[in-house]
Image (cartoon, rainbow, N blue to C red; front, side):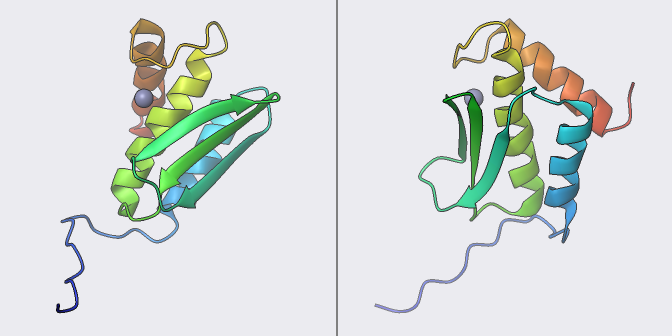
Length: 109
Ligand SMILES: [Zn+2]
């Protein structure tokens, strides 16, 4: 068995952009509770949980930075939509939250 070639993702790496995205979310879409964002080896791209009043957002560390940011926005939008109801789905509340985050990130107010 040979050494596996690293997967090419087609994404450019933007060093520090993920941290910028985290700071942007904390500043502009505060959750009103402590939130921890971690990059780990996961089976899924990411997940979000609310445990004892703390949000835990986990993002797969194998993702390139641009994709990791999209997943971060996705998971953060779950947390935002849980202000009203804690439903782990991709319904209207989640979609509206994601839309607001994305619009502001790309500069549309
Ligand atoms: Zn989701």
